[in-house]
Amino acid sequence: MASKPGPLTRWPWEKLGNFKYLLLSPLVIKAVHTNFLGWQEADNFSLVLLLWAATQYLHNQLWISVSRYQNARSKHQIQSKSIHFDQVDRERTWDNYILMYIFIIFLVHAYIPGASNLPLWNTKGFIVNILAHIGPSEFVYYWAHRALHHHFLYNLYHSHHHSSFVTEPITSVVHPFAEHLMYAAIFSMGPLATIFTKTASLGLIFGYLFWFDFMNNMGHCNVEFVPNWAFKIFPPLKFLMYTPSFHSLHHSQVHTNFCLFMPLYDYLYGTADKSSETLYETAWKGRKEKVDLVYLTHTTSLLSFFHLRFGFASFAAKPYSTKWYMWILWPISNAIMIFLWVFGRSFIAEKNRLNDLHLQTWVMPRYTFQYFMPSERARINKLIEDSILEGEKKEVKVINLGLLNQSEELNGGGELFLERHKNLKVRMVDGSTLAAAVVLNSIPSETGEVFMCGGTSKVGSAILCLLSQRGVSIQLLTESREQLDQMKSIVPSQFQHNIIPVSRYQAGKNCKIWIVGRWVSGEEQMKAPKGALFIPFQPFPIPRTRKDCFYYSTPAMRVPANLENVHTCENWLPRRVISAWRVGGMVHAIQGWNHHECGQTINTADINNVWEAALKHGFLPFNMSLTQLQLAS
Image (cartoon, rainbow, N blue to C red):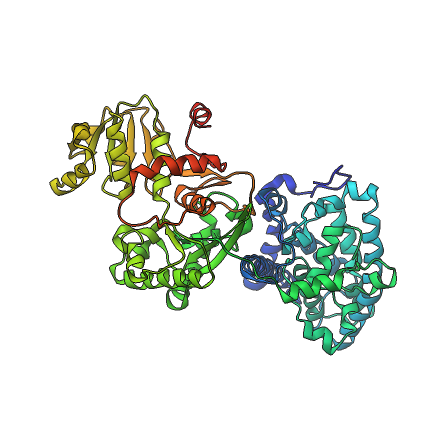
């Protein structure tokens, strides 16, 4: 919101939420009747208007995706400051302007003479529209924009737009309702001029709107796209077309570079920022950024691709869950999966900064189900190995294997790559030591008995070993004598009596603490007593089927306030909470530890050191109660 919201700040349909789309139902009904039920509408304008709206949604989403992807990987980024969740929340209703324009265009078509039954194209109208835009539209917008920066109007309205210091494409249309009404009046000068001169056409009107959004999105994308050769070939272009860096200065300096798309009036009236050309050259030349840590993860379900940073912004800013309306994207998800399977390699999804530590997240072009396909293991390992070697080439300090990229069945917890490349300078870290520490420190200190399943993993083995040394009685679910002997072998002999083998989930019927390292179905969870606490130590959550029990999330920690550019959620975790495995990689890099931390076993002697280091650097356990947090700090 603006500093002091003025009249008509809120949109008329704001209280409707997502039900605002029902306002389009009369238009949809009319389009259906016209095309399928025999009603007459000479120019089929209802359908044309709906198709335009759909095109605008797709166009804007493509700009969001391209901009976010380029901001993560491109050297041409303009502003390096962070985007936060409050900006994503503020901009999530960016599509309000599309609804407004649908209503305005529909009314103009219905009530202004000469606005209906338009031809597909008219060249004279194209010329009239250009002249009207260069003259009245750009000129009036320039002075209206300057007026909005007067402290009175700025506090009432325009400060809402300037709340976004680092802009995204959709920032361009995030304004109060009153501002949009004014802009609509200014921007309609060109199309109205063609209507009044009887030179209007459908191609011109909707083409102009599309071009308008293209320029608006480009100017707010925070990545310099405009090549410098264009200005060398035609120097006057700098007066006729702005660049993202030119408009970026308007958001950082506020009282300069007021133009719409043509800097001409800024140069004429002395408001062009003196550093405009310098910033453009710097952004276009680009800056090389160091990368200290790479977190190598992968997508989970097919629809989770849209939960990545460059997917749907508001969707990615919430914990991942499959929404019913997302299923309409299922065909696109399948196409993306096939493309990634054939042509994919790891790609950069986002970058963060923690003090002087530069972090990047790379995503493997594979989904969870593919990691369980024996035929895919060699290909996946090759993709992981290529990413490690690319990190080595870029002088990355730590490669942090996330989710199933560190699977013991896949590559021995990363040990395979150390055997193949014995002279790696980059440190390989899976973060399992901290994951075990998080689980151990989230178990209530008064616990005397636990039920444990899935304990054969390295995280489970470490938890088992240290719990038994605390004197906790552990009912270990196992059907294999060999597995039991293997588990007991890591436990000092004087504590082995604390491990009690069981073969059925029914054995945990009296245990209030269930420590689970594998999928536990709803039927299996029913064996736990009322009020039981489920504590998973695997990277994937278990279904929460018992309303009379308590569930901790997968091992995770809250990030410190100085971790920058966090505006998406990591999979199913809440905002500013990330997996313990990922935090383990960060701690390893911050501490500057020079050893690899991967393989099929965990050194239990390191668990307390890693835990204390994480707390020292501001990470806090997500699953702990307030009392436990106070004791930990």
